[in-house]
Length: 346
Ligand SMILES: [Zn+2]
Image 1 (cartoon, rainbow, N blue to C red):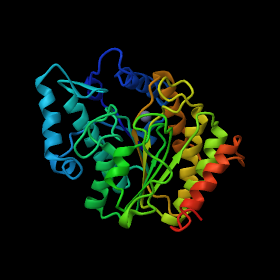
Image 2: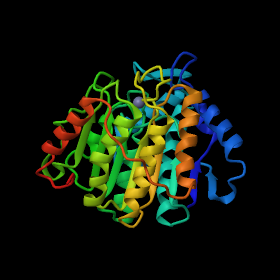
Image 3: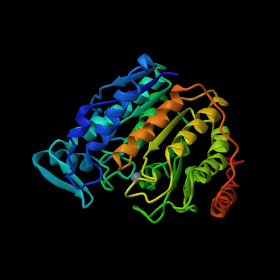
Image 4: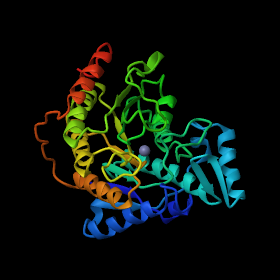
């Protein structure tokens, strides 16, 4: 299996201030890890520099006013798009390149030059709405990538797995009525943006194509993997995605200052393995990952290392799992019941 990565120093030019958790040192740690751990990976790991996204592709998700507002931030040394989303004069370019890296990832996968692609980008994207930045996000990278895959490659079934500890309200909202994008998220409801109840399942043609699993902080790797096995595996078999997108935030890690959860590297590696094993049964659609959160640079780099290893290793089976907390089994049963009419979780 060959994996592409987006690696570009210009993502570090988006400066948020010394005390902001979403800072360029996150990418410094990831780049150091890549140089140290994958120096001998050869052409199995190919790095791509980013190119800016065409404006008309960004406009398929964001309003012209939103885009104008972002471009205008180049006129000031520091400004704020939202109280939690500071930007500098170079941020618009980093945001533009982040989207561009995602489109390039989709093109690379569709041309079969790689079977997986990890866009190691910042700023993140899953909270960005059509007309609003926020939650450290400027453009909705994954949503733009999904819409691009629909328009450019005529894809009809795209699965988005959002394992960031925060709910990806932007992705959910943008495809809430659209069955061509099935959105699955595990997140902590006590955290920003406080949305993503299990009862939010989509509307109109998109009814049943949003799956929200609000998780408890006490849940361990075993709980999380068991939960993903209960909901994600049947969804992959039944929905048969042509492309899998991962909103890859690592802020549910036990060392993360924002997430306050208990996951370790093994949870992210395990979900990756599960995606690969389950999707092998439906013809191994390409897998695209875009970096979202993860605010302890060392842990972030080590999680990404574990995920990349799963792609580069031969396939292996996951051990049998049992939930450690009763809440995990209750949540899975609740979700199966809530989605029983849609036939995707059987
Ligand atoms: Zn997050």
